[in-house]
Image (tube, rainbow, N blue to C red; front, side, top):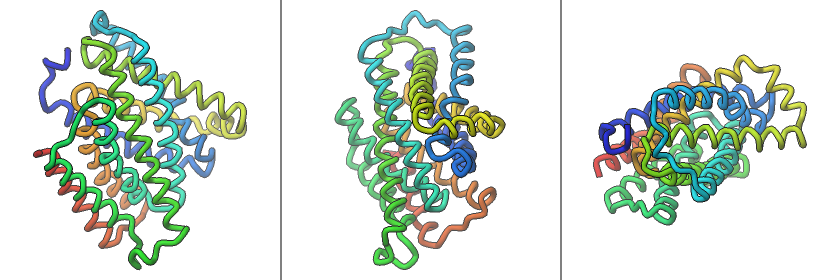
Length: 304
């Protein structure tokens, strides 16, 4: 199936599915941070996600035509950009989660759509219209409300500013990663969107697994050993991570990075559920109001 024959709504289904799987993966990774460290928990999504990504590729290769897929230097460059910035983004996100509640950390990273719109316009020529920009401002305001302490802006101190900066930096890296991977998928030519997305995911995870494995062998072999000892929860986190990435990449093959990552703000709803049901964390009224603005912004953007 090529992009032109795909239903117009399919990217929405893929994005929502990616958000659900990613929320579960994030919760699983968060539980591993204390045991294997931030870099170790980051590596879990790649090391244990790679076998599943290769399985996806094998299944797709058995039923799809790869003759229209064309490897190139442009593809190699963009997939490297996407892979490298995703590693950094995940590490920054997990570091922020150690200092702030799960749902608010996810909200910090969701400044990403503003940055995706900027990077997408610069690198891919995918521009956002005036109404969409208004929607992004509304959603960003919601993110800000979710991040301000109950005492107001004056309550910001070093302890609360640090996770905010980590989360926003994570969002910037996720934005670059989204644009990089979409550009890589587009650079593969006119083949079917499923083969292009799946091949990009597999190659990206190979690069990420090799890079982080080499880093841990050099700097923190204890963490690598702990990852192997924690293989049971790591396999689950890796599986959900690979599934989430597969769905994200399918969405990127069908729609602009800005649209996909803006709809991805619904992950905040899933994060809210996980925080209340699994992590026993509560949200303030200010955070609830911010969450409502984020939802309004997403709905307006999708209708723009």
